[in-house]
Image (cartoon, rainbow, N blue to C red; front, side, top):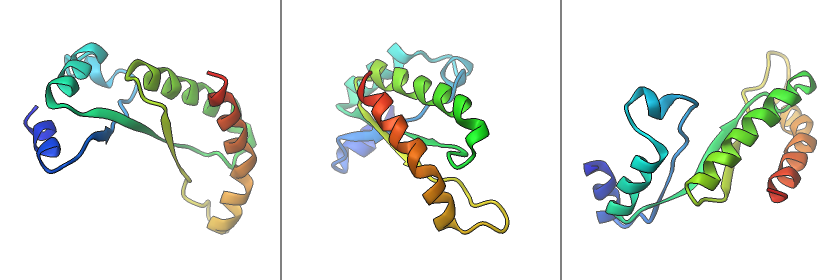
Length: 116
């Protein structure tokens, strides 16, 4: 709680908070207990971070499953923003090529999220 209050004291109004599946429970926390801590500090969840092998078409189903988990979690925290981070480029492939390959998947993810 002290860290949240410190953030509020220096002018933050939200945090990027991305709990991994099972992480809250392993710490003895729940979504509701985190929401209460945030309310007490006056902060909001502004976004979740999401990265994965978006450039790999064989991983599309898994990416969409994970994205849905993030969307559901965002909804639980009253947030709407999903920050997308590009993955590291595989050996021999430029980062620009990875970003070019992932663009259609990210576009589709955005359309899916918009319908939620």
